[in-house]
Image (cartoon, rainbow, N blue to C red; front, side, top):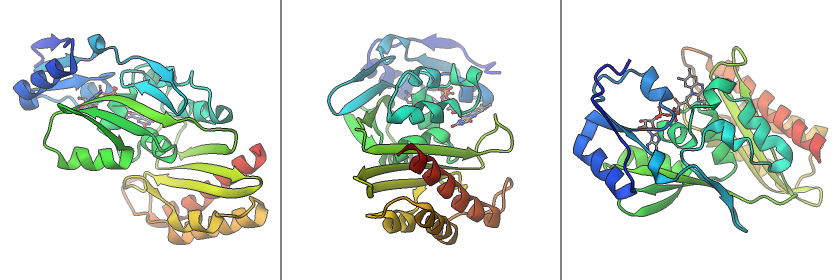
Length: 276
Ligand SMILES: Cc1cc2nc3c(=O)[nH]c(=O)nc-3n(C[C@H](O)[C@H](O)[C@H](O)COP(=O)(O)OP(=O)(O)OC[C@H]3O[C@@H](n4cnc5c(N)ncnc54)[C@H](O)[C@@H]3O)c2cc1C
């Protein structure tokens, strides 16, 4: 378990943090909650860089956004009472209470497993991340995943911003797992904005396909300007099953994932219909 670690650093500025990352190259890395770093036993790691002195442990809001500092743990995010409690319920379904006490929001987005609950939840809610790599970049989560893949620069993820949702927005998230505490085999988030009774805007995001989360475009198109009722929801389920882009992996077959994408879409839309 991280037997090769020689020294821990507590930079006092983002610039100092970047300099340490550049100096140590693959032998140094940032520690969020440390869950992934410890679990993966990265033998090359000799220098650990903690963000404790960078004041990234805040949750604040203005008229347009809720801003979440990167070092908040997932359980701290449960304080954010938005979308009729459905954001909090989504977070409470992730992993276990002990893990949620330790996993940071920054660490989980940067690690970015394709099955990550947090990626699906924050893409559905159109979250944006702030990344410092010498200058500040504000990126959607999809843009961030591309940035991480293509950019050679060292960076610190400093903040995640969620738009403020008024009462016309409704959200539901479901993860399908083998046991309650397992990682998701597939997951889905749905955000609906209503105008009166009609759907004005909708995000349906399927994650753990097993690829990275994507929109179910055909279902989103179908739902626009419709009222949510049993018939519309059943048709949405059929479209999701037919059009979802899913694959086999060691955990689940493609056919089973296809069926599940329909079932999750139906269940999420029913939850939203019941809330309206
Ligand atoms: C047993 C187990 C169960 C899990 N269950 C779930 C689950 O149910 N759902 C789910 O979504 N995820 C789950 N995960 C995945 C978990 O969310 C990730 O492993 C996540 O990276 C852990 O967060 P952390 O803060 O501990 O990350 P760390 O281990 O601290 O860091 C992960 C990576 O991110 C980098 N990093 C951290 N913070 C920053 C930052 N601010 N800026 C730049 N780089 C940074 C680190 O250098 C490292 O490379 C599970 C993991 C484990 C080990």
